[in-house]
Every structure is written in structure tokens, then in C-alpha cells.
Image (cartoon, rainbow, N blue to C red; front, side):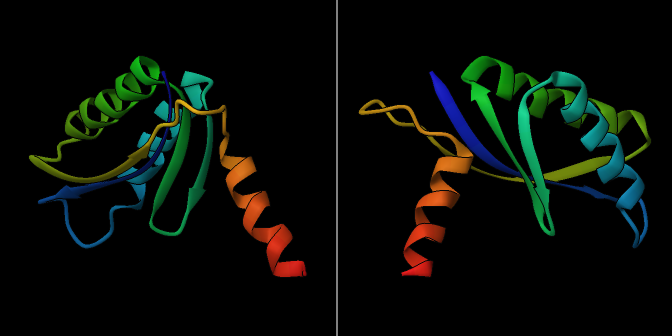
Length: 100
């Protein structure tokens, strides 16, 4: 099953700045080869369900390995069975209407 997720991983107990932890999670996502797009408050990732969920787990493992004792994650996800849809399709659909 194809899934599109919006992932926001927030380490707790590491101080005010979490950018190094976010950068490590981004390295994990990039290494996965899955299509993704970082934005100001998270990252959209798409691909096969098991591969995407494995990346979420790997992000947690990497951030804990950096010394974060706790992580809170917000995860939104969507799947479709009526047709194939990608992140770019969803964005393009809205952008085309905005131009009208």
C-alpha cells in the first residue's frame, strides 16, 4: 500500500535548539531513497507503507542515539485505494485551482 505521511519528530531533553537532531533525521530519510519534502514544521514522505514506517522508526533510533532521552512525534498519513496519488499530484491539484 502506498502512503503519504507528514512527519514531525521533536526530541525532548536536548535543549532549545533541535536543528542537529532534525538534520540527522533528514539524513536518515534521504538515505532511504523515498520521495520526501522538508517544510518548516516537518517532512512529507511517500512510498510503500512498510518502507515509510521503517524510516519513521529509523529516525527515532537515530535521534535517541544522539542522546535524546525522549521524542514526541506527530504523524499524519493518508492512503487511497481508488487511484494512485503522489504528493506532487495533491499540491498540483490545489495550485491549478488557485491560478483560475
